[in-house]
Image 1 (cartoon, rainbow over the protein chains, first blue to last red):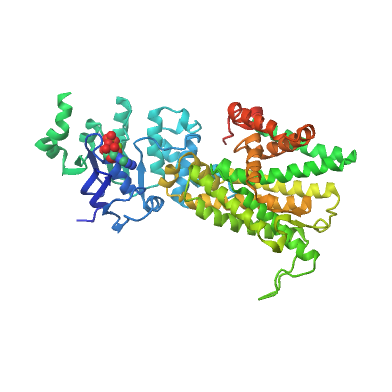
Image 2 (tube, rainbow over the protein chains, first blue to last red; image 1 turned 90 degrees about the horizontal axis):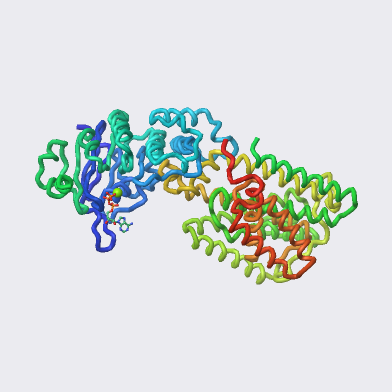
Length: 251
Length: 327
Ligand SMILES: Nc1ncnc2c1ncn2[C@@H]1O[C@H](COP(=O)(O)OP(=O)(O)OP(=O)(O)O)[C@@H](O)[C@H]1O
Ligand SMILES: [Mg+2]
């Protein structure tokens, strides 16, 4: 078996008395979508932050491409090929849609310290940027100010920026949050194809999307990872139904 | 064409016509005021890179203005007293040559910005403002207590420094030098804002997390911006010292930092010509209101309040509209 692209080993994180992650271990393998589900406040976003950088675990390790990156800074992890989308859109809101993706392409190319050449006239950056916009269907909105596009378009823009990085793995924190049914379906189809490019760690509350997409599903409850398995295994598991899915059936 | 560009062109035209008129009418005082406008604008263009583009509210740019000023003062005072700055381990002599002075001013204020930035950029928000302010005070008290270069009294330079091929004592010629430098730096600053560096820096101001996540180290980005910013303000300090033929610790006061910020706020934060419009307005008010009352800062304060409350884009924003140019 080839080694996993991403591996988390016994990750622990507490905020005061609150244990947000407790001994969490799992991995993400080439070609797969690994969904991470769990009730609100289970510690999913906390886990993503520690994998992406920007939050240091209390203990445990994060391995990316076989390298221990636990103490590597966020920007360096991104340059290694770890792309992240946020639960709450993190975009440069005053910039146009195009400027946001060009920024992504620029970060990936790595030559930020150029002071004279206009970035928006750089053919290479523009090529990567437009390609990413086309893939998510935002090319017609390229000139719009990010603060003025719809919420759904901003979710797509987040994904487009991640694409410009040409990453080795995607970390997506609730990409469907707040999307209408048709947009969710569209994004589901898109992610389905994306896994061939790079594996995806997908945090998502939309169970239709999760069960149709995920090769494997991990369930996080009160900071603990209680099970990892295929969609069928998860559906069949009593503990999961009790802790998580059961709640949904009742409503 | 965008309205802001038209406004900028009009301001440029006005700033070119006024000295020509003053020169023709033989009004050297007006020429001196206009030179002051250019120098203040230059200091503001420097701060605008940190503040406007980078969102770094530095209350310590007096440090760089002062370091630039003292670079000029120290070099010129040694030259006029014919005493070398140091002989051991190697000889360094003073100089009256403007280009050399400028270079030393740029390098030393860039180094000061590296020092201040490396320590203060680890913080943000109010802490950043406080640390930069504290650095200003440290430099201020250091120059006061350093007797070798005049201490509290500062340094008097008897004649203006030299520029090859020009008579710098002639007000219009010194004005041309200052205008030329401002022009070059404005051009650089316009290019910078659109460059890869500017895109990332401005992006980090809007959302640090976003820029980090695409693999750009925002600390280094801001540090480089701070150094460029400080170096430009330092160059302005050297020119200001040359205009007055005098340097004193007052260049390092927090009031100086505040005034440089006022130029930008009056003119328009992050606007290319913001510092130019702001410095012109400031010098004009100082001249007109300062004649009427010693307490003209009250009116300046009122105006600032109005700008902050009702015209966030400053003078340029008021004239050109809210929309910032995107192309
Ligand atoms: N910086 C922080 N300081 C203190 N507590 C925090 C911090 N970040 C998260 N928490 C807490 O840790 C717990 C886990 O939060 P987290 O955001 O990881 O949950 P989540 O699984 O992503 O939830 P959701 O599905 O609502 O997004 C929550 O109780 C939250 O309040
Ligand atoms: Mg979350």
